[in-house]
Length: 515
Image (cartoon, rainbow, N blue to C red; front, side, top):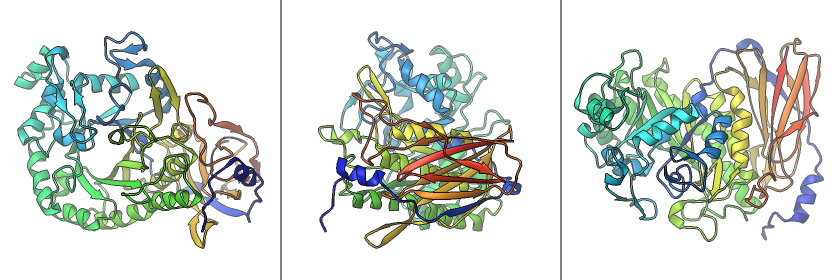
C-alpha cells in the first residue's frame, strides 16, 4: 500500500474529525494511597553529542552565551520551570569508560579522553564531578551518578563515593577539599554499572550479579540517615531472565533498585526518520511505546516473587523515542527533531509510570539536551523547548502527589486492521487537595469524547491546559520556536461530579479540579 506523508492537505482532514463514542472513566477518589514519586520525572545527561559540551555546558570562560560557572543560564531557567527532580550522569555507555579522577582538579591539568562510544570525539574532561553537582545544585535536582563497573575497579568506585560523601578526614575527602569543596555533597543515588548486558561489558546476568555484589560491597554508607540507593544494571526491554537472575542472586538488603531500559523503536537497523515519518511509522512507534505497560507488569511480577513488599524499585532510567538522526547531522551524536509524536510518547509513558508507581519509583528520559527525545535543543546562542518539554512541564503536577486509580475501557486507534488503545489516563491528588487528571489521545485522525466520573460531587472549579497541533510532524524550530506550546483548555464541563470533554487527535490535556 502506498503510504501518505503527513502533508498540509492531510492536516485539513485531521482537523475535520468526528468524535467517536463516549469513553467513561471512573476516577476512584477514595482509593488514593500510593504516592507518585517525583523521581519518575527524572532526566538523563550523557557525554554524547552536544548534550554536555555545546549544550548544557559552554565553559566557564565563555562570554558570548550568559552562563553560571559555564552552565547556560537559559537552560538553567527552563529546567527549573520543568522541576527536574533527579538527573543521571555521566552515562549511558559512556559511564563504563569514564574515570572520574580525570574530571577533577585544575581544568588545564586534566587529561583528554576519546569518547569511543559516541563519535570518537576527543573530550578535555572540563565538565566533571564538581561541574555536574554544581548543575544539580543550580537546578534543585537530586544527582544520580552512574559508576564504572566495565573498565573501572571496585576501588575506583569506592573512592568516588568517599570523595563526594565523606565529611571526615580521608585521602578522598582531603582531595575534594584541595579541589575547592570543603563539605561533602551527600550523593545518595548510584548506578552500579550500565547496560552490563551490552556496552557495559557484554556480561551474562549470572556474572553481573556477582559483579554487582562485589562492587556494591565497597560502596560505603557514610551517612546512616541517607543510605546509598544502589541501582543494578537491569534488563534490556523484555529480557525477563535478566531480572529473574538478579532478583534470585542479589539479596534484597544489598539492592535498592533494578534498572530497565526500553526505547520506542521501530527496528534497530531501520529506525525511520525523525520528522518526515508516515502514519505507519507513527503507529509502530506508539506500539513500541505502549509496550512499556506490559514490560512493567511482567518485570514487576518477577520482582514480586522475591520482594513481595516492593522494597526494590523498578528504575526505568532510559526511555524515549529513538529514530534515525536528523539529516545532515553527525550519526554518532543522536540528534533528532522532536515532534507531536514525541509528545504522545511522553504523555502515554508518564501515565503508565504514574499508574505503576507502586514499583516504578524512578525514571530518566533520554536525554535532556540535544540527544534523542530531548526537552531542549540548542544551536549556538539559540535555544528551543520541544513538545516533550511541554508535556513534562504540564504533567509535573503529579510529582509527589497521591495516585488515584482510574477504571475505563479505551477506544481503539485502528490502523490497517491493527489496534492500539487510543486514550491514556492517570490521576492524582496533591497536598492542597487539588485533583489533576492527565489524558492523551494518540489517534492520528479521531477525537475522543470522554466522561470522567469523579466519584464525588464536591469539586467546584475546573481548569485545563492542552498541547495540540494540526500535524503529527509539527515541531518547534529555531525559526519558529513557539509553534507548539500549551494553551488554556476551557471546553471541559463540570456538572454533578462528572466532567465531559473532547480530546483532539494526537493531543494531551491536563485538568485541575478544586473543591
